Length: 297
Ligand SMILES: [Cu+2]
Image (cartoon, rainbow, N blue to C red; front, side, top):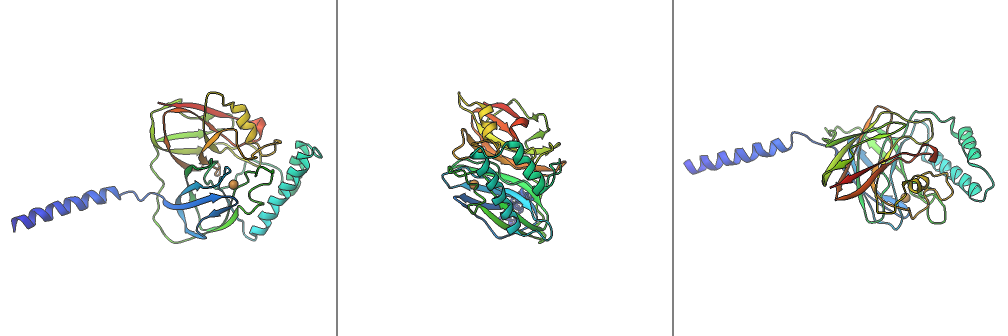
């Protein structure tokens, strides 16, 4: 009898230990495979805090931008927008139009640039063979996930098929935001982050404090530096309307990050950091370029 009571006590202790570990639910996990030129991903996911774990199994860089679809807007309209932008690339690459012409055309087609952000996060730039984890909050609704890295021939991945509808249902999932180890603040003029970190696994809370007036907001991506990486070159490559902008292969290794969310919102980025030299960098018009170097010991 006494043995049974002791066993029972141990069992209850074990149970209470378990329940301590599940006090926090954390985000829902959604697995994504990115390759040329498609996302392998679920068609429907529940609403709430969601961690997208995306592996790049392709031969080119990829990302997954989450674009909420307004009422009455179809995925075909977004697809048409992608083809329209591809047409601008084609003319610019042949020197038939200037960068100013591109922005005039975008302004006519999509409205003047402003600091409003419609996008809702998603895994950032990730190089071949790497995995990235980005967490965002999704309300129920329809979204388009897309990648507009450009193939070596200059064609955007979304035009080649890397664009897909994602339905977010209103099932109650009791998901929660992850606990953050560090916070990074994104302003229009700088990225506020630590200069030095110890090696290990980190979840960074990304605070979208400001957004520039433009079609692309302040997002954040992680690059691994080697001795001769020029961040000016990387920032120029990350400007989609520079001549070889976003044309794979990239001049640097990308380890993920998160696309922009509206001003005042937070996203999370989880990564294992090995010792080395790194930089946080935003995908922006080249004139707005900014980055922040840091060391992992
Ligand atoms: Cu892609």
